[in-house]
Image 1 (cartoon, rainbow, N blue to C red):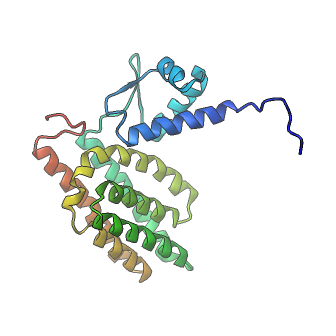
Image 2: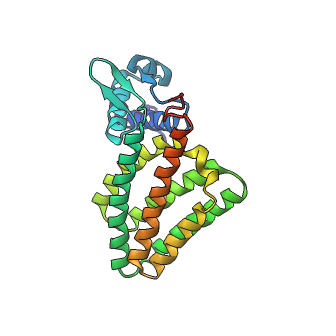
Image 3: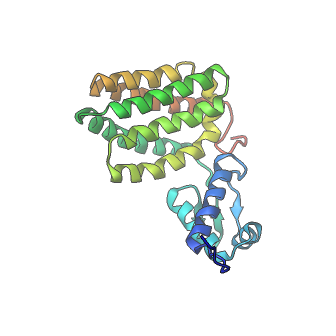
Length: 232
């Protein structure tokens, strides 16, 4: 097939998606630290695009909760306070509780269990390799898959914002993952209880999982560490 000499224009929306994904990755991997301010002009120059796609990308990330817009000041990577993190886990518990109830009430969920099983196995392999960053990542993948298994587009859409904010919490929690020797077993137990259609049992383990995360957070604050890593 003969190719046209006319260059294909990349839609601005595509530029916005690319820019947004790169900024998202920088926030999640810690390249952009909590409290960092983002400048449209600097970002546009850095990515080689106009300010329009950058502005659109920033707005998307603000909606996701990965950035925060402060009137008359600009756009910043949020500094998650202890109250913020507790609220994130409160919202996650509500959403994941609804997902568990939906899953155990629905027939034909074998595929969901297989997916969750694979993620737990990936967590175990990362744990054995002492790769706690991957353990943390697979942990979030597990909970995302759990909500997806409920087959509720609205529930999944709401959860996408909360899980993005959870990633901001990892700067506080990830360092304590190796203190949770029971973490993988806890996830395995959730899968087993879901397979047995034991709704109450699965919800009890899920609640304990979130409670443990909050306790870990409080312990880290008690040791003099604030969410942004500075002395409290």
